[in-house]
Length: 122
Image (cartoon, rainbow, N blue to C red; front, side, top):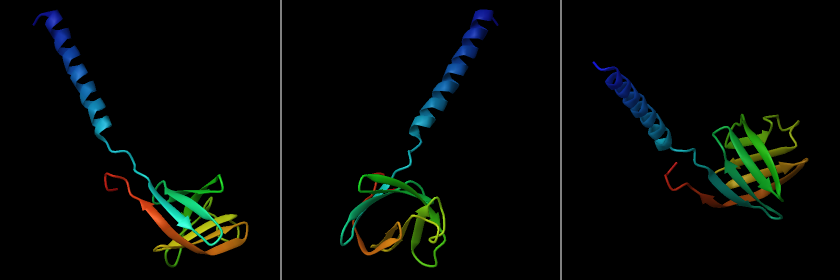
């Protein structure tokens, strides 16, 4: 086989392999984010689900990364995954109801008002 043909064949195979890799990377779906809006008696806040173990709480222009912690019922998140006694920020939710604790002050009147679900159904 001619040397130029060998190099051409090798180059074509490499280019095809690279193209296949890059197209499969583009086809992989990105992680969608669920955004929940809560309204309490005296405040409102937004929770963005980053993963099954972490959420981003946005309240009064402040962002808090909360981590899931064990809960007997419902879902509980706290700052840095600390226990309630040690955590400055904690969010508990069950169904549409929620409780938010910041710096020892707990608001038990929170209700989910809006839930945006990504278009791709995740």
